[in-house]
Image 1 (tube, rainbow, N blue to C red):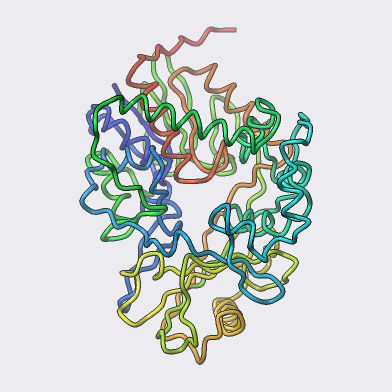
Image 2: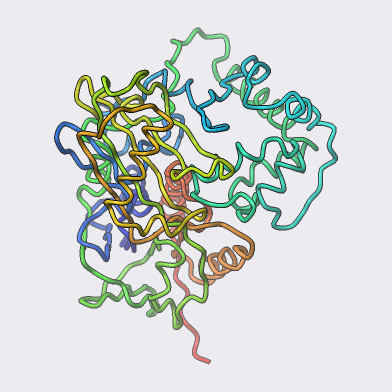
Length: 464
């Protein structure tokens, strides 16, 4: 079996790791990466006692896909869980101040983030008739089901996750589970309760009458002793890794596929295209370059290191998000060393400020000096910091976050067409059906299952 993966980011390496976990010899796996390093958005920088992640802060600890990949990569003893306080304490900016977000049913009732009118409207959601609206935006879906009072929170959340616009992103592509609950149960709340009951029942049946040792609840986030870069290295271990190899063509020749770079041609029985839709623009795929494109949101990340004595009240919890109506410079700020204390020296605080996105793309293009200056002003205003940070770092990515907006069905149709016409070719990566590492890890396991459980026979091309 020969397998070639186009793209050495998290998505591609997750597939390689899943294949190894399924028993595939790593020498049969080739990973082709156009840049001079693996990992894509993910990298770990350690400077002056601070640990900076250039991509996500950590992986979702509750993700079955992530847990499997950690097991396959033999990293169980290297895991560092996020703190309990970061899981329960989060904020949103409202009228220029940080307001604690509700963390449970009781706090949702007593919170000042939502008005009494909004709380009543949320409780009325089970009585709202379901509607199947094609390519409905997230903003429209939430307002229709729960009322407009949740708009600032949804706006902030979508900016924080997708760096996008909730009035442009489509619920069917971004959070299809929510739409499915509405259509199946007539209500998101009713569907959520039903799903919880089913999971509880399944867990009880699994346990049976035997007493089992109570498992500790997985952390919300997790990282590794050497940062997320450690997972990238572990997942790639043993595979044939080809760096600085730009793929220009993918074609079929009898019973095999040919992946052609500017330097060489690689034969494969299975090919995984692990790039974003936009990154595929320059590759001739079976005779033509794909005519698909997604809008991308570019984000600049400014990391700031402070002494805790510089704060009247040192930041505690996970961080905060800022709705667009607050007109803040940042989309939000993560309290990185509150989530993972080892990321800052003792007595210090590390903050990660996210800037730009669909809301303000021009800000992501600012000079490093202006980005740092404006980020510092936000920290002074919202977190009451005194003086300048002792450490700064700016991260900019050459590509942005794919936006799953109206018309994304064309991208999905292209993916389906290629996978159907060419068995053994699979798609994954940012912007096809999701962007989270949780989503990509589960997709990697599915692809590995397809390849190892069923030998794909490549059809012989027919002459016209």
